[in-house]
Image (cartoon, rainbow, N blue to C red; front, side, top):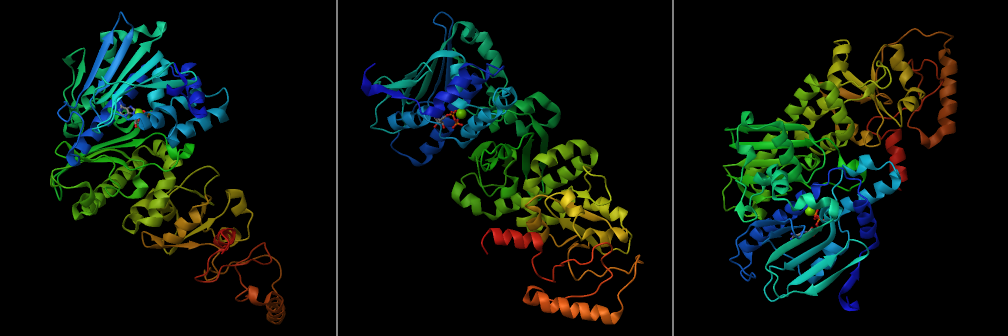
Amino acid sequence: ATEEHTHSFQAEVRQLLDIVIHSLYTDKEIFVRELVSNASDALEKMRLKSLTEKDVFKADRELAIEITTDEEAKTLTISDSGIGMNKDELVENLGTIAHSGTKAFLEKMKEQGDNNADVIGQFGVGFYSAFMAAYKVEVHTHSWENGTDGHTWSSDGATGYSIDENSDAKRGCSIVVYLKDDMEEFSQEARIKGILEKYSNFVSFPIKLNGEHINTVEALWLKSKSEITEEQYNEFYKFTAHAFDDPRYTMHFSADAPLTINALLFTPTENTEQFGMGQMEAGVSLYCRKVLIDAKPEKLLPEWLRFLRGVIDSEDLPLNISRESMQDSALVQKLNGLITKRYLKFLEKEAKNNSEDYLDFYKKFSRFLKEGIATSYEHQAQLAGLLRFESSLEEAGKLTSFAEYIDRAKDEQENIYYLTGMSRDAIESGPYLEAFKARGLEVCFFTEPVDQYVMEALPEFKGKKLVSADRGEIDLEDVATEGEELDEKSAEKLIEFLEKELGERVEKVEASGRLIDSPVAALTPKDAPNAQMRAMMQSMGQ
Ligand code: ADP
Ligand code: MG
C-alpha cells in the first residue's frame, strides 16, 4: 500500500471498531441484516433518483440484491445495484461517523465503563458491524453518476483503509466479507438462508441467494391480522425501522371510511431521545397500494408522534402525487387527524386494560404527549386524559389521572387544582398546599421542567378548569383555624405597613382565610406568570 491510497479512520471509528471487534454483541448474525438493510436503502435511493435523473450509469441494471456464499474461500458477498458511492462518499460514509446515533452510542459506552452489555443491544452500528465477523472487508462500488470512476475500499478494521480505482466495478455496491475462522458458518448457504428468511420478504427488491430468487415481496400491512404472527410483526418492525428493541405496542388496522386506510403502527419500547441521540425523524412511511410514496413524510403525523414507526397505506392518494405536493395536500392533513385520533384512542384502551405496561410506556414517552398538549389544540382533550402524575391524596410514587381525580372530588368542585415544582418534597414544603389540605381538596403535582408550559397550555379537562393552586383569585370556603385572629384594625395597619415596605414589588396585600400554618404567602395575580414561570423567564434573560 502506498501513501496515496491509504487513509486512517477517524478516531471515533477506531473506537467503535474496537468495541465491535472485541464484540459485546451476542447476536453475531445482525451484521447480515445491517448489510442487507444498507443494500435495500441504496436501491430505494436509486429508484427515487431514476424518477428525476436522466443520466444514470448503467441505467438498465435491474434493481436487486445478490448474495453469494463461498465456503471454500470463506467469504460472504452482498451486492446491490443501488446508488453506489464515489470516492468522496466512500471516505465520508465508511471512514467517519456521521450519525448522531452512533456518536451517542459511543458516549453511552464510555459512561457505562464495563457494564455495557445492556447498552450495546439497543444500538446498531451499521456498516461497521461487518467487522464482528470479518478479518477483512472489501467494498467494490460505482456511483450512479455517469462519468465517475469505480473504486475498491478495503480494510482490516484496525487503523485505516485503502481506496483504489477499480474500472470493473458495477453500479452499486458489492461488499465482500472475508470471514474469521470462527465465523465460517456465515459462508454456508443454509445459514444465510435462515437469517434472510426472517425479513427478506419485507425488502421490496428481489433478493437472490447464489443465483436463486428467495423472497416474495410482502406488504405485511395489507394482510389480515390473523395471518401474521407476533414474530413477523417484530421482525418487520426491526427491519424497517432499523430498530434493536421489540415494539411495545403493535397497532394494525384498516378503515374504509372516510378514507381507505391500511395502517401498521409500532410504538417502540425504548425512547432513543432519552439516550441523548438527538431528535428522532418522522418514521411512518406513506404508501399508496404498496407503492412507497415517501419513507419519512414529515406532515403525515404530528411532530410529537415522531417516535412512531411503521406504514400507512391509503388507496385514496393519487399514485402520481409528488412528495412535495403530498406534504401539503388536504388528504394528508385528513390522514394525519384521523390516525392521530385513532392512535390516542388505542393508548386510552391500553392505559385502561394494561395499566402497568402503560405506566412503563408513560415513563419513557410522556414527553411526547406533553409536547402534543402544548402544540396540538385539536388533540388536547385526549392527550390530557393520558397524563399521569402524583397527587396530594395519593402516596408518593403512585401515579393518578385527571379522570380519577374527578371521581374522588365532590360533584360541586369546579376546578382541578395543581402545583408545579422541582419535586414532590419541594411542593409539599411550600406554603400553597396547606389551604387545600385543610379543606380536603386534592392537588395534582407536576414535577418536570416542561410541566409549567404544558399546564399553561391546558385550560380544562372534561369541563373542569385547571387551576394552579398558587393563584390569588382562588375562592376557598372558610375553615375554622386554631389561634387568635387579628382584629380588623390591626390587620389593616399590618397591610398598610407591608404595602409600603414592598412597594411596587406586589400588586396588593390582603388578609385571607387561606393560610393555615404559614403567616404569609406570595400568590400569583390573575393573568400573571407564576413563580416557576418567572424563574424560567429570568434564566432566559427576559
Ligand atoms: P446508516 O445505514 O444508518 O446510514 P451505516 O453505517 O449502515 O449507517 O452506513 C453508513 C453509510 O454508508 C450509509 O448512510 C450510506 O451512505 C453508505 N452505504 C452503506 N452501504 C451502502 C450501499 N450498499 N450502497 C450505497 N451506500 C452505502
Ligand atoms: Mg445501515
